[in-house]
Structures are given as structure tokens and as C-alpha cells.
Image: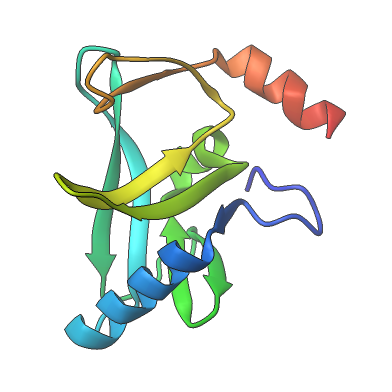
Length: 126
């Protein structure tokens, strides 16, 4: 929907692709559906759910056996995002490096996006 021909909507690091493929195999799912929803102190939060099917309006990204589907309403906000998977001593999980974020809360759980006009203008320059 909001893509640029020849450019994937999101990218995955090798660690993220490996973890997503592992989850898909272990749980027998089609992939992970990512999106955004209202919430948190900065206004928006990422969502990530295991999916058993692909919606016709999803943007689908496949890499190294991993599949990510981007919910239609989130495509504009997630375009250009790199998904990583980090493992640390105290926590592990998926991390989003998103160029469309203008601010984030201190705990890192919620984000604020650039306004729609600014995002649309940036897409026109790419």
C-alpha cells in the first residue's frame, strides 16, 4: 500500500529472521503480524502476534524462512523499520529500529510517530 517499488517495507536482521522462523516452526504459524495501536505514555505501541493466515491487505516480507505480515493501518508507520532480536542478561525480545519515530517514552515501550504529512513527504523523496 505505502511501499516503494523494489524496496521491502521492513527488514529483519539475521537474528530476527532466525527467531521468527523458529517461532513459526515451533508453533505451526504462518508468520508474525506486526502493527501499531494507541497506548503507552508516548501515544502508540507496537503489536506483534502470531498469525495463522495472511490477510489480502497485509504487506508480506519474507527472509530466510521468516515471514512478517504488516497490518494495513500500520504500513505507513512501519515502512523502513529494521526488526532485530536481542538477547541480554535481564531481557530478550524483538526491537524495532524505526526511522518514522519522533519520540519514545523513557521505558522504551511506547513511541510517537512523525505526523502523517511529514511521513508522506518523506515517502515522496525516496
